[in-house]
Image (tube, rainbow, N blue to C red; front, side, top):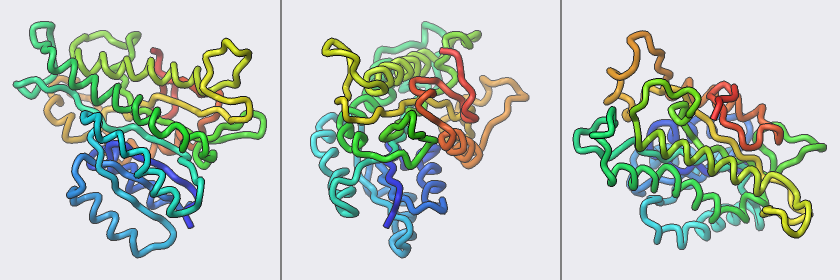
Length: 286
């Protein structure tokens, strides 16, 4: 029976799909729940068929498009059903929010100036990159509270019940922004970082008094939240924008980026709660 449970939101391609692959290749038996916009996705279906033959790992695929709010109404129960198939009251040990978009500009390029900015870009990108991860956390909160520290480095002095990783981007760093542009994407990832910090404060500490802004009961362990940049990864999304980067820019492969992020995740502890980290676990200034 799988000993670790993880949900990957936005797992049909790119970094999300690579997270699924590498987690299922780990020596530790792992139950992965992967979301995609359409159940007919061939890549996840092939992986699911492969792992149906193995008792060590398990892969469940659920349909979810975070732009469609009505799908959230039943999604929480679908996740509970997947978990209960293994063991009653089993929780989620880790949630990775991967789904993201860059923009919806008609020219299929990022906004390099204010003249390029459209309200549809700002609204759609915010919906996927910010609203989606927040609602995922809200709907899965009870399952996350029942989780175990199967990922990261929990200690008896600083325990936590589960780990939530929001995939951000170094472009979200206000301190490191020296070239501008990328309006919708930068703004959305910056907002995701703030959401991560808010969640870390609300669910990362025990209530001090009745007026504390705290989502925990006194007998509940904290949740560990981090925002993490995968680096500049050679995905389909970045192909359109390679010319905007310096000629000597290094583009990580999906496999290299996810491998490094998982290595960094394995070292996380409660002292990292609310931090903005790169793919090596080094802190990035907000």
